[in-house]
Length: 509
Image (cartoon, rainbow, N blue to C red):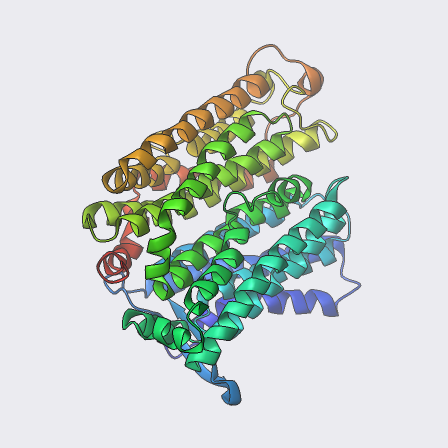
């Protein structure tokens, strides 16, 4: 498999589709949709081919592509695949076609929508596979452009404000990260994540930064941290997320929560922790409280929402904060408990994947409710939908109970491993985090009861169709995957077990 540039194919095939759409301005809406969907599916196809040749017993990078790009800056075009990046490539391959199908009936410039969506998809894949900061940062920033236009041009009434807020926040955070890596380059002469990780493991990265100035290691750590924290987002850098997710079109919301939100967590695990383990350990206690703020306040904020899209948006803050809770608990505890460390980190990786499935499915369900009701999406705008649309209600139930963490569905195992690990490392943090679990159950069950049970009322009182063929095409595979990975989580865990073992033994301060 190494003779063919599989990773470049994964990244750039969606962009080739976007280029074709750009060069065919007179393409019909149906052809534009079909072409975009075809190229979007390429990620899943190439990802499965890469997975078939992936050696799950190795922790290092595989299918590596490395070519000199800018010699004067010591910049390489460097791609590599390990268990974590493979997991996120497969997630992107699942969520992206589902997001395009979610906007299948939107007649507003379908060619341009598909073009921007494919650009966003390719940029996210570049983030998950690039191993040199220069191309990685290009992919990181390029993802903002199509996301901005998808929100602004196809979003709701408040889309313009939400789109600008999204861009200002994320570019602001990225500026701090860029300055941090400029200092790293000045001190080391390289931007390779692999080489920088080796320098950090030997204690030379901090020493080289200290040679510039004594405060540089801490300043650079904070700059990189801010860029990643805004992207996740970590509480209290989250205020851009609810309006962006709520105003984006359904397909855009699915990609933002299912894939793009994972870019920040990925950056914490790929960049911040390997390069600055000592600084992360020193800051872990206050960061634990910030992660708990996202877990608890995210859930309670979701409980207060009457707009269903904003409810799911705050739910995403809550669920992604579990991943950061696991990471910061490990950083705070150090090497005190290897088994708990492995459990917490395995749970964080599973949570990224499983949340991508359940949250994107929830956004799809809310979008379907909105389409049926002529734009209504309030918690009190529906009632009795289960009797009017039993199949649709059942499939939405899969997504809702997966997000709730019902045993047997995929959302359970990630949260279980996280809390098992965090309890073994910092029991008080696990106890506080349980408040988020209780609030999550409360607002999701309230959503389930108000919208799907009771007498038919509001938008359900009149004609209310059951699941269409298009909705079944999206929800049935997602529900099947939620059940499959809930019953057989080892299918995913086996991809990254050696990687987690390496982290637990080498990356701790």
